[in-house]
Length: 404
Image (cartoon, rainbow, N blue to C red; front, side):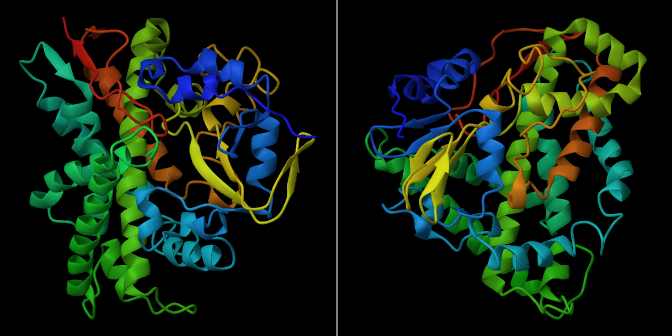
């Protein structure tokens, strides 16, 4: 059985005019769990089908398994391990995790909590005397980029260069050759090249010079599986910088927007600071930073919900739709930090579950706790706020608030 679906719903989701509230369109999309599009690709939008395919060994993250070329900037660069399949994916992920988390460096993330708190409080100190604040430019952007640059060993004076590079790369993720100017793809490719060259230069300085930053650790790793190549280290650093930064900016900004729209919950967080842990999990379900995995490929014919997806087909995974699926979550359009059994798709699922998730969680917990505690009667200036172009990594481009 093959399920067809009018492309209009997907086109409306991807259109910027729907960015402020795509959720009614996701509900419409879920009526057809596996939807064949005009270009031969498939869109999957329901929780059960999404979790099933994310754990399916016949699903490939390697662009080389697509039956038609992928018109995206990442198709022209050394792939990071999230764009590879086992066993190569597993090897590179293990090598990266040796320096980023348990079991080899179990205290890396939790040990950064005092530094995170200091950075957050310093940024909020700079709000003094300002009646109007942009949570994005004044807070949510500089916080995670400072953290990731510190982890990688990037000099503070070079951090502003990453803003331009990351914006161009993210903007190119949803490049459509039928509707977008080629300049969009070219700018993304140039930004990737510039970032890769810069990180390669930093890495060259780390060889033979052990240090505490991630580049130095990976460059001088003497573990049982050997070291990554320089290209593999740079692609991993690229992944950390782009994916880790952009998702955290969106999660913090979406979180503050959601709290301002739910003042009773904001006040409750002031009174019950421990609420922050389940609250961030609910944010990852309710207003996630990553809405869409724009492509996966089928190694072989796959059957999902009685639909046969042919080998080599492009598959688009609508993660944010799955996390609002009423077949899985009770009252899914309600923000409820007391929600139980909250197995959201905010960080994906399966072997590609976001390996930077623990850091993003702690950054967001630290950021929102401090903002709620220290801001005096904050109110939104504009609701809805203006949104970034990308439907994939969705979040406001600005979030202006006033203090009274």
